[in-house]
Length: 110
Ligand SMILES: NC(=O)c1ccc[n+]([C@@H]2O[C@H](COP(=O)([O-])OP(=O)(O)OC[C@H]3O[C@@H](n4cnc5c(N)ncnc54)[C@H](OP(=O)(O)O)[C@@H]3O)[C@@H](O)[C@H]2O)c1
Image 1 (cartoon, helix red, strand yellow):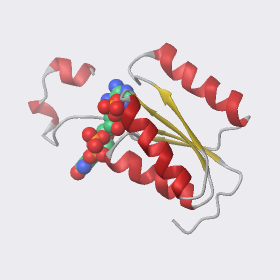
Image 2 (cartoon, protein in one colour):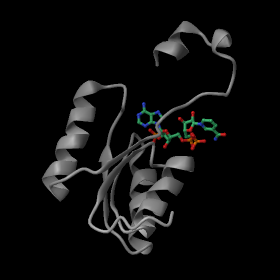
Image 3 (cartoon, protein in one colour):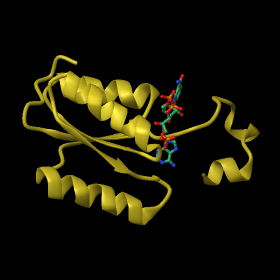
């Protein structure tokens, strides 16, 4: 990421692993502070450690993105901590890459 994000603040959902963790670290390298949101605490805190190692700051906010109250809490904690929100990387997700019509109703709802 070549963009200068100094002073900006990003939320990355699903930041506890995989693509989300990689995005969080790239935001950090570009200068943004990063709010990591996911359900697994140890993995989320590990991403924050990697954000700090990349030279920026971050916090982990335990969040299940299927629960509205927890999303509101995520945004409120972000604003309380950093007083702004510039980017939302809405990456949290799950499941195999299969055709839509092969998904169960419960998978679709989730
Ligand atoms: N890898 C691929 O080839 C590929 C291809 C197309 C699309 N995608 C999509 O890209 C995204 C990331 O994929 P990935 O390969 O990095 O998968 P991953 O390593 O399994 O990461 C999924 C992330 O989503 C989080 N998550 C899942 N359900 C959540 C929930 N209810 N609330 C909050 N966080 C939740 C997980 O964190 P916790 O478990 O800690 O909550 C985890 O950090 C997914 O949306 C995936 O469907 C991936």
